[in-house]
Picture 1: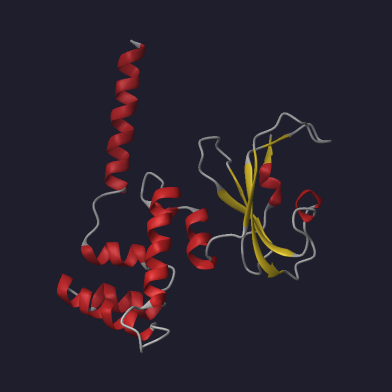
Picture 2 (picture 1 turned 90 degrees about the vertical axis):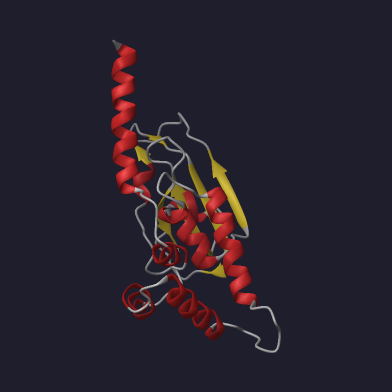
Amino acid sequence: MRELTLIIISFCFSGCFSSICSEKTYNEQLLHDLQYILSKEDKNELKYIAKTDSQAAAYIEQFWSSLDPDTTTEENEYRVMYEQRVQYAKVHFATSCGWGNSDRARVFMVYGPPETVEIFPWTEDYLANGMSLKSYEVWVYNETSDITDIPHRFEQIFPNMQKFIFADKSGVGIYDLIFSTVQDEHRDPYSLLLE
């Protein structure tokens, strides 16, 4: 009976995820891979103007040309760097619906690779309120931060540097951004606590 229940649950989940994470068209894949550098206007143009794959490819070539930092070389250095980041993110930050749906992938794509990563496993050390800490990672960048209201636990890790703190809230290896010293990024350090 238990095996039948597991099979039914497995079937339901695979059906649910397959409808959510269906195969992407060429345009959808382009939008997905370039989501962090396309402007709202670029996304609309790619979505509504480029109706065929060849139109989308032509639009993207023009887009990359506009971002080429050195037009005197054959290689578009920015494109190469971005595509390397995409490949890294696909391998290291993939979720059940692809690489671009995780906070770590977004931060990696926008800010680049961190200078330092500090990893803190889940711990049974209880805090004053009787809660334990979830697993978390601290990504540190060599940029100074002017944010001063940093939780004590994090301010001692590379003080005054830009930081992103990701927590594995569910315990399955998917890390969500819970706090950052970068302006306009998510800031909820107390979600690191287990109730």
